[in-house]
Length: 453
Image 1 (cartoon, rainbow, N blue to C red):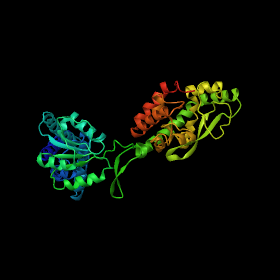
Image 2 (cartoon, rainbow, N blue to C red):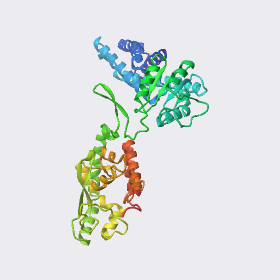
Image 3 (cartoon, rainbow, N blue to C red):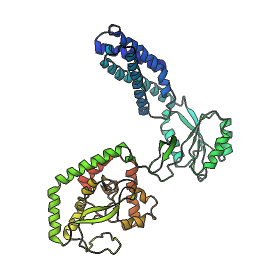
Image 4 (spheres, rainbow, N blue to C red):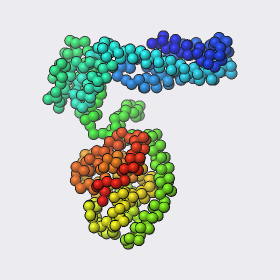
C-alpha cells in the first residue's frame, strides 16, 4: 500500500503538469520536479505516522478518507515550506499544487477503495477472518455480535461468548461456545486460535475486569474494551480529552458544541422573521382576546429552561382570569375556564406564537422539549427516571414529541413517559436538519391535534 501510494502521488503530479502547463513536468520550472519527489518521499515516511497503514477493520471508510485528506494536506504544506527555504517558492505554480492535492487525493482514495473492496469480498467468503470472544452479553455485547454477523465484510467471527453477571439465562447460538467462568475465558483463549477479545461488561463489573486483565496479561492478542453504555440511560457517551486524560461525557447534549452556536443563531433569525411576518395575525389575535374577555392579552407563567434556569414563558391568554392557589390544573376537554377564542387558539396552537419573544430573549429555542409547569416538574421528576434530563437543552416552541401527536393534556404517567421518551430521542439524535424537519412538519400538520384543548 505504501508503494501504491507513492506511485499514485507521482502519477497525479505528472498528470497535473499536463493539466496546468500542457507539458510534461520536466519542462516546467525545476522546483516542481523537486517538490514532486520531495512530497512523495515525505508521504512515504509520514503516512505511516498518521495511522494510514494500520488495520481499519471495523472502522468506517469516510473516517479513513478524512484522515487521508488531512495527512496529504500536511505533506503539501511541509513541501511548500521546503520550497520557501530553498528560495524557489516564487517559481512554484500554486495552481499546480492545488491540482496535485485534489488529483492525488482522488488517486489515493480510489486505490484504497479498490483494495478494501477486494478485502471485503474475501472476508465475505470466509477468508482473512478473525476469531473473536465476547466477554459480557448485555445490550452492547449482543449488538456487537449482531453487527459482526451482518457486516461480514469486516471479517469477524464470534466463536465464544461469556454472558457475564446478570445474563446467565441469555440465549446464545448453539454453534457458539458458551463460557460460564472467567477462568474458562483464559483456558479457551489458550487452547484456540483467538485473535481478539471484546469486553463489553458493564462498568459496575470493575472487579471482574481487574481479574480478567490479570488472567489475560500474557495473552498475545488484541483486547478491546467497549463499556456497556447501551444499558445505561444517558444522553451521550462521547470520549473527550479532559485535563490530559480520556473522559466519557454521559449527559452532554449534541447541541453543546459549535453546532449549538449555529442552532442559536438560526433561532434568533427565525424568531425575528416569524414575528415580522406574523405581525398582522398577532395584532388580530390580541384584539380578539381583549374584545371577548376581560384581562391581559398575554399570559405569563414560570418554567424551567436550560439547566434548570427559571424564566417566564409567554402565551396568548386562552382562559378566563382565575386563581390557581399554588397548583396548576391542566386544561381538559370542555374546560369551562377556556374562552371561546381561547379554544380556537389552543386547538391550533396559535396561543404559542408569543414564545418567539422567549426565543429572542434566549430562554427558548424554536425546536426543543416543551416546557412544563413547575408543579409538573416536581410531580414527574421522581416518577420518571430520565424526566429532568429534558432540561439539558433549551425548551422549544415545537418539538419531536409534539409532531408525533404527544401534545396537550398529560393526565397519566404513561402519557408523560411517552412524551419524555420522544424528547430524549430528540436530544440524543439532534441535528440541524432534524430541526428543519420538525419545523416543516409543524407548519403543515403539527399545529392541530386531538389532545389540544
